[in-house]
Image 1 (cartoon, rainbow, N blue to C red):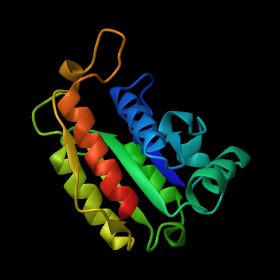
Image 2: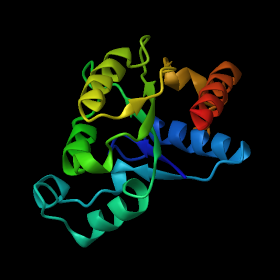
Image 3: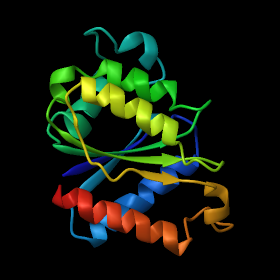
Length: 173
């Protein structure tokens, strides 16, 4: 099982579209997967689920999407030259033992030119500290709005092929 984390709580985000596309690719490749959108975190998450205090909702999310899973793909947008604070808060709420020695691939998404390379680097540093094994083929996706059709679907063939290449490599990692 691979958990794909849509790393923002912004409703109807482009990041979630990329995460769902990644999920479809993994399914097509024959890999069981699930998508956890940080949009689905409990509304009082920041003050109710940290430091050992867990709501039933967050415990359920941990037990489904994090604890039993060995591989993760994090799709994260660029927020202010980095990654979203909700993603950092989510990682802070997960006990480090639930991530240690597990594997993770990173996909950056931005409306600009860099595909969130800074955010990928910054998250990589935090994940190394947590002893997560990072797949070396990071995927920055730039100019995301120009890669989608009017229905909000990712349609740009080169980007879809890059997602397929990363997905196949990560599944074998």
